[in-house]
Image 1 (cartoon, helix red, strand yellow):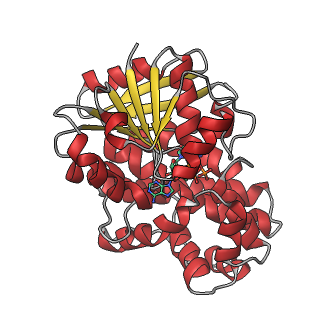
Image 2 (cartoon, helix red, strand yellow):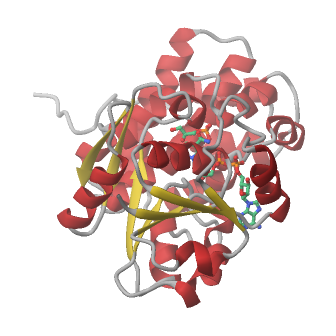
Length: 335
Ligand SMILES: NC(=O)C1=CN([C@@H]2O[C@H](COP(=O)(O)OP(=O)(O)OC[C@H]3O[C@@H](n4cnc5c(N)ncnc54)[C@H](O)[C@@H]3O)[C@@H](O)[C@H]2O)C=CC1
Ligand SMILES: O=C(CO)COP(=O)(O)O
């Protein structure tokens, strides 16, 4: 049994809290929002996962020091925009070598850093790792079979995380490619917005398959240019997560996209979805990275134009279809 502190009690933090508790670990949950802690203490329910019953022995607290002290593992599950500020708050209580596994998905717009890079900067004493894959909280909280990948600097840490999370309903693989895992997890959200927009416009399965396939081509091009491994983009945190996010009704990004495809503004769509829509925060960063690494990302460009330049969704799709003619894969030369 391990002692685990969960930093952030949104949908994902709570689904993982219950998974870890069911695996026999001692779990303490912290949130920056006192009302969220109070609600869980009083009702043993969470507002975004109404079917989930929070166990009696799970502890909810506003005390970050208590959540971190003596813990074998810390799980950071706050939305990407709060990762740096939360890590700054964690810094005084982090002990040397403490394992901090980030489960959020995003890229910081101002610095273009991944979330584990931010954690390493703000928590230089921690052993920072990631856990990612096709894993909607709504399904994990119902114990539906799910797979993820744990990325860490050392095999020992990755296998430690694997051993804590793994169960008959949650299978965990290990990988040394932290960067590839994080880039796949955050860039897929931008493509999922496009897939949702296509659904909202009433387009079909052909369009969806095209966006997934050309989307992973964009993600892999940028990801490998930045140093991620090509195999990772073909794995759970790459194509796996892209498929589930583009296809699932649980996806916040897809749902926001559907609303925009139906004519709602970005602000209307995000307020209707209520939970965090990470693709909106990652879209500008993805575009900036594609320019920095001189990698072509036409879907990412069009998503940015729809989100931030007032371009109509149907015009964006037309521009994608009528782009300059090109070869499918430049790695396959003609004889
Ligand atoms: N929900 C899901 O199925 C999955 C989510 N993720 C990722 O996990 C991360 C969190 O997502 P969700 O739990 O779905 O988000 P959410 O929208 O359910 O949670 C938002 C939470 O952020 C926290 N928060 C609010 N203001 C804060 C502040 N000022 N400082 C620190 N924390 C604050 C609160 O605990 C709040 O409940 C995202 O990066 C998401 O992409 C990853 C895999 C699955
Ligand atoms: O990352 C996720 C599933 O693996 C969650 O995606 P959404 O934020 O689009 O719901």
